[in-house]
Image (cartoon, rainbow, N blue to C red; front, side, top):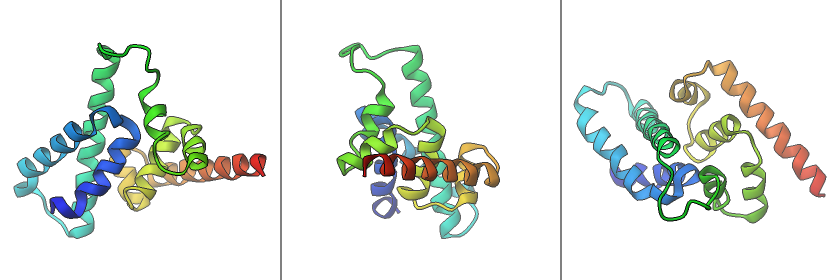
Amino acid sequence: MYRGLAPAVRRYLRAAADDEVDDLTQEVFIGVARGVQRFQGGEDDFRSWVFSIAHHRLVDHHRRRRRQPPLLDPARGDVESEAVARLGDQAAQRLVAGLPPDQAEVVLLRVVGDLSVEEVARIVGKRPGAVRALQHRALRRLRRDLGDRA
């Protein structure tokens, strides 16, 4: 279970909280271990459930960061932008980092998490139509930004 999902969960968490990805990944799988007896569903449902836990841990992480800025390097800037900037190819990094946070979240869950629209909707607390609209706007914006570079 851990070996199958941890790499994708880590990539998702790294995109928004690179500084504490190991701790957050551990928190996610502790949550999975605590709740697995209550889980009902198939393999796809389980993957969605694990990413839902990861999303909630990430939201909690951002809340803690807003209340208590990091002590070691207060000049670091926006954590999410820094994390997205490490996703791989430099051009793709800049493009995704330029998306509004809700669009970036949907794109990351759909692409990195390999989740369906319905699964992403449950995770982020939006309707599937809203997730599709966010994804559409994100892809349209990425397409436009790519055209500007050509």
